[in-house]
Image (cartoon, rainbow, N blue to C red; front, side, top):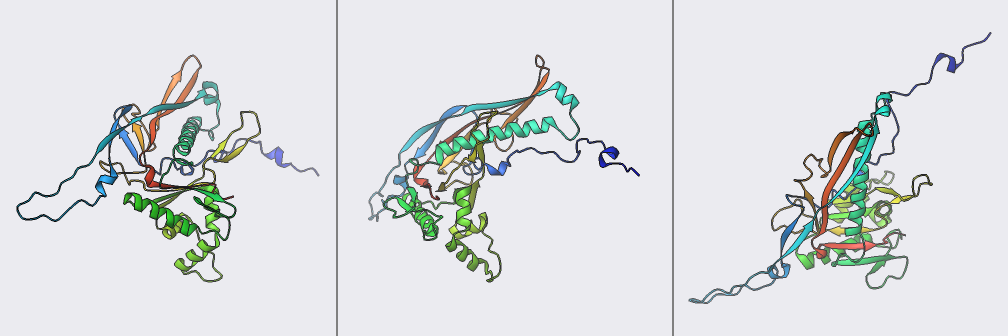
Length: 332
């Protein structure tokens, strides 16, 4: 006796409650989280800087009766920013739009796709501006596999390394030069993973969390922030595919094996120093999301397509090199 097969009682169709798209989470990108966003009215302009040495010099003196007080002054210089417009679009063919299954929301996916491209570009620019050797004057340290010398430390994947002391040294260097205590530690994902498994850190976190011998130690961003005594530990998880379309994907972490300790102002304000600021031209990008990315959707009649276009007008600007302490190649 024949029985119906599975295929004879069901005709394959697209699932209406799921689809798969490899869109990175926005939280993978840290460039929008580290330094404050400064909304500006013009594409380029001037901002003023005060000489920090003038504020940290001991000049007040005792005043004798009938004499003038001792006085002093401070220097003001100016720097410029210049917001460049970066844009990207995706066209949705009208035939595909009208013929798509319900599970495929092409317009929503297009916005996510465009956002991902712009955040990736910003992350790459952030790394090129801030996350490399030769930028930070409070400390520019190289990780080495053995026998560290001046401006070198043992790589943090080595159980004999001392990342807790290394970060403490960086904090002291910034505080001594500026009077500001660093409040953010930025890590590449590979560095974060090595720190989470470093025996000294596990032991210290175990003690702080009062964890028993048979309990798992939870070393996450907050645990590391508490351990290093900073407000935030940010981990860049963003990846980049360097292969051309049609070639085998070659994907790697954008931030690499590096770490940055810095003072970042909680928000942009007058007379508020920060290692960096991101200037955003708000009068140009009128309709924008919290990342400063603006979107437009309009019909491309000659293509019979809907265009989803995103753009940003920003300048990621180094403000003070003495407010940052950097480690390059800090894990193997």
